[in-house]
Length: 308
Length: 308
Image (cartoon, rainbow over all chains, first blue to last red; front, side, top):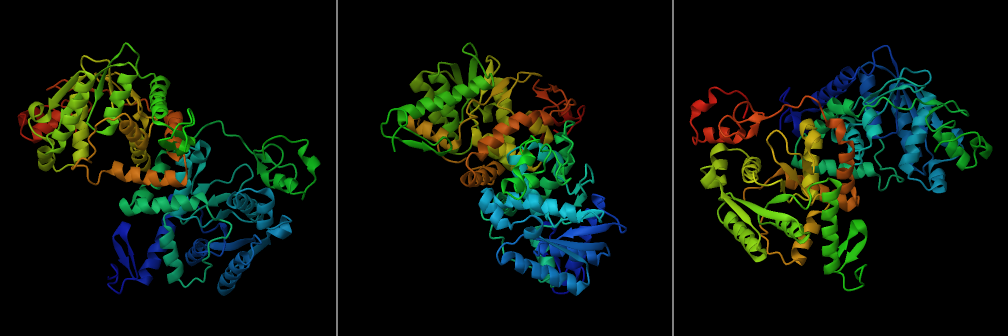
């Protein structure tokens, strides 16, 4: 197969565009898709300071690499969750990536800032690791973003579609109202954007490979049975039978999403312990976790109500 | 396994209810689910004359059998599509079913009323057979229903979920607004109901088997590649991984469906040739088909606009 642009040897074929490309022109294609998402959703400008949330995996490192290549002002943020081996190997990749490019990197350790590692928390609270992890990552990412204009995360099209499927099959109206590649800065939350929204998992992996990014490729040992993986597998099968359905489903959703908006959304107020915005009444969910784990005194709960 | 009701030998296990039942109590269960759907959606009463659209397959004959067993006033309607062998064998089953129970049955032949069989129409118009067939069935069912209060069709939960999936994945807002187990009599259309909405394909097949209904079990030779079959296979896999997701998806949809309703729906007006309600402008889609096939004069088109 030949590259459609330069007629050189193609390295990748993209079935939904019926497009074969060589390495150089695939990288161009990828960056164009990122630029298009940034522009379509007015994610940020050249002047903005962007904090890229990185895990060491292909998505977040490809995102950081792409934004840096496109000339944006970026820094990385990595939260070390303390998962045996997994976290250390991820962290090595992130540190190496930042160092090679001379980019600023902030590292936070869950054990230091929260007082416990993720495996310990999961074991003691007996709740799904992915749910707890998402909550903690969002929390510490917000803390780290004080000096930045926007947080960028490496969610790709498959991630977003898997989330949409979960919200649609269970008709989670609140999530359907607010699932978006851009969340505005409001109620004490930072602006959050997903510039890889127009790129599939496969496309992101190909970019990481072609750019020679040394990313960490193991699935998190705590994520077994995650529903996102289930939905991704289902969507992969649907895409095989109905080419383009994944993108049509996602794009179409954004165009009808207003139907799910309601007026009566609760406005968050600051947690009385840490100041993090919360709708859970008085105490945010991370402070509640700390109380349940004996890391904060129990009597803080007494003046608060809500479900945590 | 033992029947939960009578402790006799169970013949079926229903995983989503964790329920094993013998033949007698399964039949009771099935009829209760039909009654519940009829009641929840106020489908019809004992006084109504019900026209059951039957194809000879398990769903429509089980429906007719169940409604008759429950004491409703029913007659059957069968449209002979003229599909080689398939239609004749289906028709035999329907005739035998009606005769054995002494129930009234109306039969119409597409070749006689339309002027051509379905395979001929499909071949000449080069459009998907399922789309043409659905259109023709609805049309001749309406014609047959003049003396009845309501049309009942054998769509089961899987049919309805497959239709919902197609509408959701492609965000067909108009269909999402109106997909329902009950369509009211309005704008010249008859009332239409789907009493098997709470029963899966497997549950309906089990009922047909246990009631000894001699139904026709071959897939229509023209339906190859139908998207409904694709969606059903996907949903079957989802149900294996997430028990109950199918029913949750459908029930949840009905509870949020109002979000898809709009004020600006076009009101149908009678087709100027046959009087059938249409929004296609002047001529209904079946009369347009006839014109394209040379079964009606072409100059009828001249005073009409619309896309057919």
